[in-house]
Structures are given as structure tokens and as C-alpha cells.
Image (cartoon, rainbow, N blue to C red; front, top):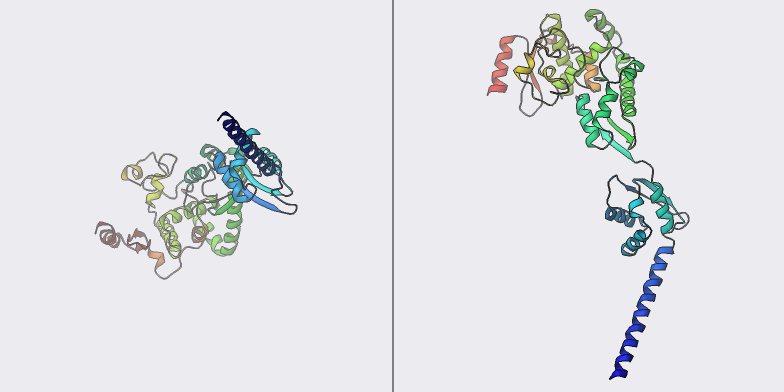
Length: 350
């Protein structure tokens, strides 16, 4: 019996040696073989904050890891999990795991971030958005949007911020972009758009400047009100015309969105306490004329409407409008207060 036991033990030992040898050969083969041949390339992204399992999964998808279990063992033996840097990677063969590891340690190129700014957003909405998208910190964006030196360089030295001058559009930025670069890019786009629209408007712009004594800042301020008052492009010239008509009639503009412009109220619904506050310098209920500056960042259609108010028949008499709230986004326009009250009863109170 003792002889049999010895032979069994010897057999198990032989099998174990064979298994260990096979595992060793597999490990050596996996860790030294070429995973990208010469001329082959692959691209993948490691986002900020990605965990090790996610990173391994992305390497598998990129085709540089086919045996995840062995790779995890090899990577931990080489202290790789703690040394990976986020970024966008483009790997070119020939490459083995050690070459992949070197690339992961050195870090990839910063990835591009695609970000959309909505027409009618304030700089405060934009600051919330860039932080939520992981582009730049909210505080950094607001600091860049109110930087006195940058405003002076942009020809806006007498303004408090870039409000109204950051063109809402879809942009691509590198993920390591600075807030100053974001603001500069958006202002540069705005400047190009303004140049196109003011050139198109020609004599009409000259007439408005002469009639109202407006400068560029006034037109942008008016356009910002148009932007937040209607989202329907065909209505924008009519809304602009109502504003001009009320200025002609020495009437206060009384537009609700002006009541809640500011860092503490930009996301609130206008209430009488906002609109009737004499200390609220943006409220067009308590102050004559346009507010001291834009209350949002207008898009192309609103900028165009500010320079080209409606010339349709009867537009010169329009003084009021009220949202229909029927899902169309449209407004009812009126020439008299009595007509306006009836429209309010019809569309808001019913």
C-alpha cells in the first residue's frame, strides 16, 4: 500500500509540474507576444476617473488584451494599475504588453470634448454646464467671463462681463482647455457672427443707430431680451418691434426675464417681488429703457431681429404680447392694453 501511495503522489506531482509548466509557458507567451503587428494601429480612450476593470475592458475592446485574467496578473506584478494616466491613445505596432504599459504610463493625448451651449443661456447657466460636462470648473469660467483685462482686450472694457457676447453653439475643446480659451473662442465666434449680420443689415442698422442713439451694446442687449422672450424664429422680429415701439412711446419694457438676471436669480421664475424691486437695476418694470446690459447670450436669429425689427403691416402699432401656452411656443400680439388683457384672460387664466 505504501508503494502505491508513493506512486500516486509521484503521479500527482508530475501532473502538477506539467500544469505549472503549461501555465508558465502560457504566461510567457501572453506577456511577450506581439499584440499589434507592424503597420497596425488602434485607438482608445481612458476617461478621467476610470477604474482598473474599465481600463482593462477598454484595452480588450481595442484589441491589445485578449487574455484579461493573465493581463491583470502581469499588470499588478508590474505596478501598472496605479500608474495609468487618462487620455486618448493611438497605439502603433509592433507592440507587446510592455510597450502598451509604457504608453499607459506616459499618458495619452487629451481627448476632445464636444459641448453645446444653448441660445438664451446666461454666463451662469454656461458656467454650470461646463462644470457638469467636466470641461472646466464653474468658478474658473465665471472668472474668465468677468476678467477685466480680457474684456479690455476684446474691446469690451466698459462692460461688466462677456454676457451677450459668448455665441451659443456647439464647440469642440481639448479636455485640458483653460476657461480663458473657452471664453475667447466663444467671443471670437460671436464677433464673426456679428460682423456678418451687421454687414447684412447695412442701412437699416444705420437708421436704428441714428433714431435711437444705439451703440452695439444696446443692440446686443435688445437681442438678448428677444432671445429669452420667444423661441420661435418668425416671431423674433415682431418681439423686437414691440420693444422699439415701447421705446418710441416712452413706455417701460416690462419684460419678465429682465427681473431675474443675476448670479442669485438666473434660474428662478420671475415673481412680482423680483420685478417691483427698485434695487433690481435690470428690472424693466422699475427702470426706463433697456437694462444696463444683456440678460442672456442671443443666437443668430435674435441678433438679426434686433437689427431688423418687423416691417410687416400693422407691426408699427404692436405694444404687447403674451404667450399662448398651447404648446406652439407662440405669442399673441396686441396693439392696445384692453386687447392685451383679453388675451391674458384667454391664454393664461383659462
